[in-house]
Image (cartoon, rainbow, N blue to C red; front, side):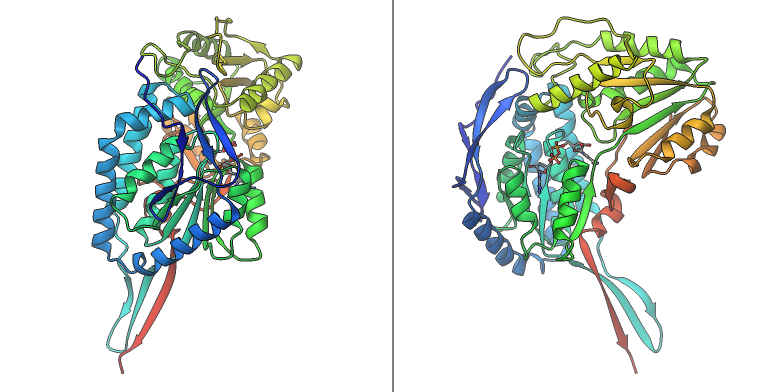
Length: 476
Ligand code: NAD
């Protein structure tokens, strides 16, 4: 297993320069070994202030750059990411824990999303043009965008935030998760070659750095992906200043398997949708409702698939399933499984030996779960899938409507027409039929209710990084 050399100290990047933060230092651990792989440091209040002032200065030019320039810069950044793909993938594995092949998928997605943003058009729209009047709608940059990212897909989510913001003429300051700052720091370093100083900065740090940045009066927009609790804090702390927000928060997506389903076709798809990235994916399938006629058969197939996984360090070639990302999260997921079992659930998967070090939890299929257990009602965000049996699908739909989570849901059936009839009863941002957790650069994605505000991706996601300006020209 080859291991990449990671610099002992990973700096912030401010005004295009690698800069040590002057506040607290913190360690980044490899979740597969629990060993320290790097040290980072948080910026002081003065350094945050300085970063904002450099962003403001960079904005004065970047916001007036033309469409062609921004598109070309994004294309060159995509190339730069491609040239560093192996290094980025290795960093992701070591800080995040996922298997190397999945980390490569993350890097490939980062490149695809960047190129897609470069392909979009932001020309003014002509709303009226006649003898008397011409009315145009322009999409202006918002200004300084603060991007705050989580630990599950550190590179890809940073790309989702940064690229549309830049494409629209904004400048960006990223604050990565304190658990996974390394690949994002490398990304921002790669980007410096293509951008004027101050257009993109990165400040490593914890919640406090995120809070200071998001509350700064000169920040115009915050794009945040993370927990509902933090999303709520950001919303409360920015209300008075009317900052623009895009919030991608938690999901507790349900899948409903209708009684006519072809289990040969869907079992592996359900497994992959639930356990992608060890279940640490906002849009993963987090609970499955199966008609009683197929309950035992589907549960057993999912358990069989779980038992084929090989747990280990993501850099080992045989590994198909990594650890969960951090100790706190490990404890949370373990606790949810224990609690569910105390409340009547049964673990269908047989226990397998786990690596001696690391935050490993084998993929766990829970059956006969009490619908009120927290593992069903809350977002578990880990390698456990509760499976619930139902007789009446209308009852399941009614139950789901009471949830505050509303990111996505899926219906599984051999009869697409029948499945489609239930869509209107699902209140959430995305509904998938016979698939789940698929996100694409050209397809808007976002949650309803407590799962978020606004959307990312597609033209609609890009426009969330702009302000509309309408120009009326009287020709007379
Ligand atoms: P988190 O909310 O704890 O942290 C996310 C980021 O916010 C981190 O960078 C953290 O330092 C920062 N932060 C924490 N407190 C802050 C504050 N008061 N002000 C500003 N920034 C602050 O979330 P997490 O534990 O890193 O990620 C897991 C959660 O994220 C899960 O609930 C998951 O569903 C959610 N998530 C959602 C999506 C989505 O697209 N909907 C994607 C990934 C993760």
